[in-house]
Amino acid sequence: MSFTSMWEGNLLNSPSDVIIDILILFAILFTSILQISKVYSVGSFVGISPYFLLFNALFDNIQLASMVLDAAYAWPSDGNPLLRRIADGDLRGFEAFGGLMGPLQIALQWVYPIALIILYSRSHPASNNTNNRNTGLSVRKTVIATTVFLHAVIFLFPTFPIALPRPKQHRFDMDLFIGFSTIVALLTAPVFILLRFVSQFMEMRHMEGKPGALSLLALSLQTALMFLMAGRWLLRLGMPTWEWRTVRAPLSLWYSWGFVAVNHFLQGLGCVILLGWCLFSRKGVDGVGQESSPLLG
Image (cartoon, rainbow, N blue to C red; front, side, top):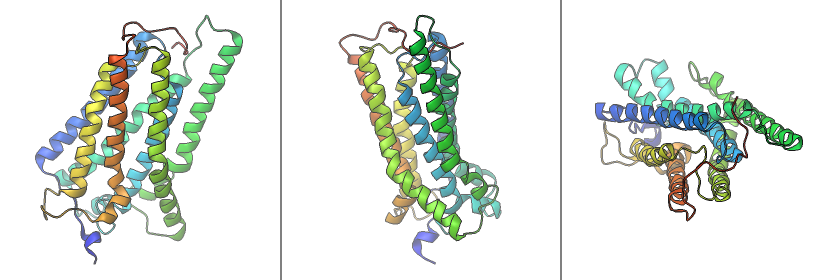
């Protein structure tokens, strides 16, 4: 058996690793609640670009799909994938719980943009908008929600019967789907990240530095969280805490699931840019701005 297929990575986590991962889970939940609460307190999505919501949800669709398939077939290696070891009883109890922390964090990250998309699609137009503008907003909400759903139907939902409750045996059609999904994720994830933050940056320029419904506290916490999660995935990839402490992961594993760390780092950079613009814009950050997004009902 090859060295790559025998790679154990950081699957057998230490108690301190698990504690850190649990804290990350709570931090993801806390930042999500902060942002959703800010939307409710402002009463609208003003200051949050609808395309920021769209590309955030599309990115998390493919990120979760890749994570499910990786946990079933490629993480930490194709010879010892996490979900197969748990199904075989080879990994159980505290060790299985520690191994699931990374995928659970990705899953919880997916819930946040989906919740925002649902809120956005169910919101009501502002009373001072014209009929034509209200129609345009309704169409845009429908298109965004439909796009996210169809994207999930194509890339995300099929991964669950493949990987759960026990990873299916390899077949040609299944391997074709896994390979196609992996390539799409590798190519489109950086594009979705770029489009997500560019669209929000343009919205913030339009708002002249006023945050509107964007929670600066949530954005600040998310900035630190993205860099922390990037570091944790680097630890899982290259610095095992169980055996082979000085051996780094084979280069081939970077192409299967190492990009998770890179994507989190890119998101952290995007958050830094948005936060810096909001805090140091000459117009300041006081006030909400003109209502240009639908009000919540």
